[in-house]
Image (cartoon, rainbow, N blue to C red; front, side):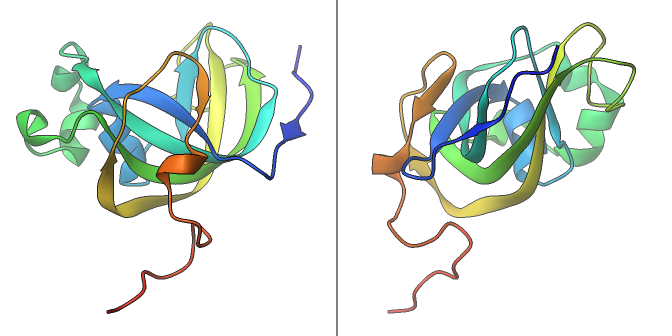
Length: 144
């Protein structure tokens, strides 16, 4: 069953993701995040690198091809923004990032933030609007 899409233009939601997976998303290589339950939200999504690390993932060859030194990764900060464009149950799709028997959150238009923005993560989707600049997320950074 696919959850109906709902977009909230007034807010940018955030999702906390353990490293090194947050870094794989920030590079644009990982365009699917796996979760246990579907999200109805569609729209801007800030990627928050959580304080925890998935040490099991650090030996995964696909991740190692993207991330050089997992010990040097930023944690406890927003590292990228993207658009959450789809959410569906696994149907043998979205490989290699989509896991079997998971809900796939499909990301598009992934952009690394110019600088990490320190933030406390939360479970599920949370509001990160107050942590981000008021300029559009895809606008170039202003020069002094």
